Length: 451
Image (cartoon, rainbow, N blue to C red; front, side):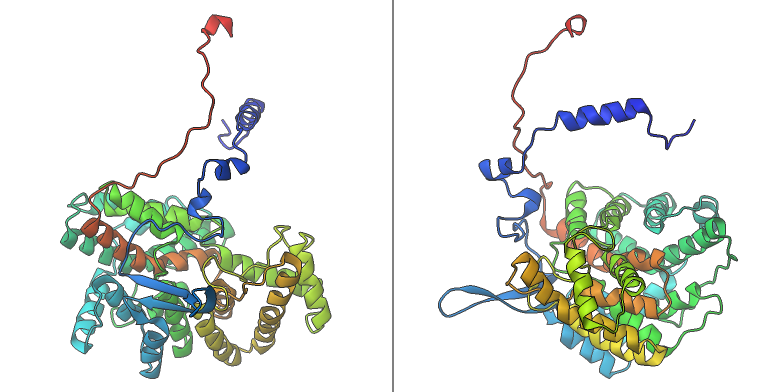
């Protein structure tokens, strides 16, 4: 039996389902329902409190008017720009320090940081035969699905999986933070071998390396990477580790955690959310959009670039979605602080890797797109490049495969999910249960013989 086949009967049932759906868009306004947990202005509806991170994208004038401002992102009250500047000036890796800050709301001193790094390194191994049994024996085409499957499978190797006391949940979170890079890369190696016919190699991590260094080491066949490459990947991971608590996958973590379920189920649910192209796959779209642009027009002609952007918005280019991927954000208007940081790093990496021309093309699009969007969409609140705009370019310059773009997001965001899971356990006490308004008119039961 072909389980993937959509039979005529399934088509008939799908048509029946569509025909019986009578919820019209205007009904949300009629019933005062904030669709997608957003108000009429597109702002997220407040559903909780958090100390983990804060976003500033608006300011209040003396007149009381609220206007957009240049975006700021704070991890546990620390401006991300200052955090990043600190470890870049020291020429050290920052992901582990960021994880410590997000989890414990404290900035570690050298001793605390070294002990924390050692703990993550000690946890950076998988159960005996896990790679063979869970990854190599069941290779898949989508890395996010394999990640979810592997995370759920780790439940069976945990002797105390359902205990949701803070020490036990923290132990589980630290283990997942440590092994998710291995699961992501090994899943990709399996895909490459079994579905692409490439040679299979599985490198083990080294305890003396950072998370970013180990990820590049086990991904590349020769295990080699430059210091700048590892620092750029580390920086991307820091900037993807957390974002305000209001994003879809973090909200998923809160919702699932509030039910009292185990850590593995909560993280698997967040992975399922992040996999969606409206959430975690945007940087892939950015890279593929630029590939299409380079194959379609003379990228040295500014007029041709602007015309291509117009055609994107008119659904006449690339995927027909009517979007310029990497431009705009649900919260930020004037600037995304993560994009501002990555822009400078992308410039440095382009000089080392010989991608200056590609970086200049990204810069040209970042300059022209806000004008085009304002003109075509009549949006004047401000539109700027977001974090996905430059992270995809950096991943491409690092030689990372597109199949790993979203898993790398998960490898970073597992830190934020962990912090939010712990915060939900500490402060909730009630299951998250949103309300829906039933709008289907009541009817009468008809006996089967009379239908």
